[in-house]
Length: 154
Image 1 (cartoon, one colour):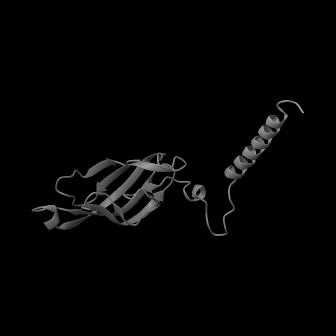
Image 2 (cartoon, one colour):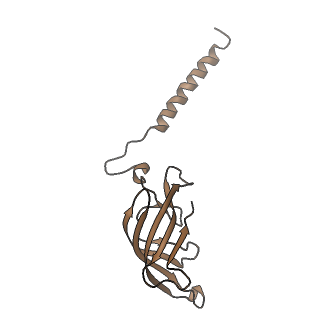
Image 3 (cartoon, rainbow, N blue to C red):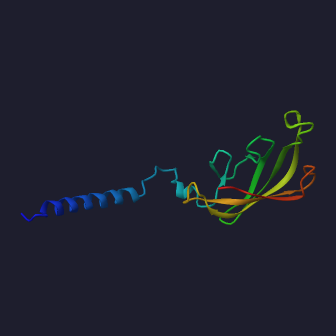
């Protein structure tokens, strides 16, 4: 037996095992009827919430993650696709008068637009909207313009 015979055999076995493992890891598992894989579920971009969970067409969305003093409610989505999403709803905002714990929440009609989708750093296989524009259609919070744009983190 050549000096390296065992080493070559071991290397070939290890390479074959490695290739088999790669083939298994990259295979797409079958999904039961009626369910979808993550790739199928998230073909369109998602909206990432305060808890870093991907959302599609949420009915409510917290804007002020730290203190909860601004949130979107009653969202009715008319569009949600690869480029943008649009909904009508309400922006419920605390006036923080005289201070936030004693403030009063007020509700304002708003149109929400999401756009500029990019890969999500936490899950690069998913894209998420990176910009939100709120257009107040009637009254608005005292210190805000009628159109406000926010970056959405990743």
